[in-house]
Amino acid sequence: MKRGWIRWSIGPVAAVASAGAGVVFASPLWAGTASAYGPTACTPSVSTGSSSVAAGGSITVSVTGSCTSDTFTAVLHSTSATLGTLTTGTNGTGSATFTVPSNLTSGTHTLTVSDPNGNSASTTVTVTGGAASSSAPLPITGTDSAPLVAIGAAAVGFGGLLVLGARRRRRHQFS
Image (cartoon, rainbow, N blue to C red; front, side, top):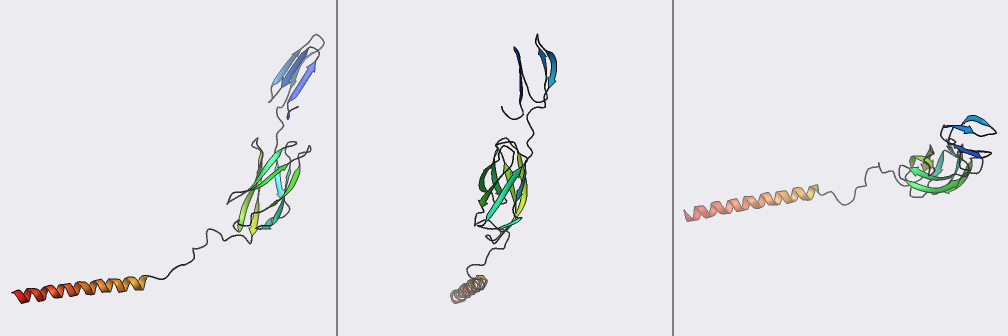
């Protein structure tokens, strides 16, 4: 039987109810109306063994309140990193231990678990000791070229003055 679908078979009459539909039975032995509430709502919640984890370390993720035998994919967001999958048991709970990537940036990340049916839950996890955050300023590399630019500009200016002086000298020689 699939999740939450209700099926009746009474004598020669069979009916299937789904998504709040009212089903009317007609049978020589029994007549009546039945209603169903449709697929069971799966509202998972997620928790971790710790609110912080070192980059490259392990984190235990637990899911409760999900549908039975459901497979969830665990993903850390900010820098998207798929940790793996976990499957819940017949009671709708499950847990798994995952390794956090060692190149994940330090800071607060959102851990989201989701199943193929669109049911999801999330919580925050702080990653410590990871790669430098992308908001850090870039390191200075190379040399400061301002003095070289000033020397070059001065040389061009001095060269311009020499050319101007040479022109005046020629004009005076031939005049």
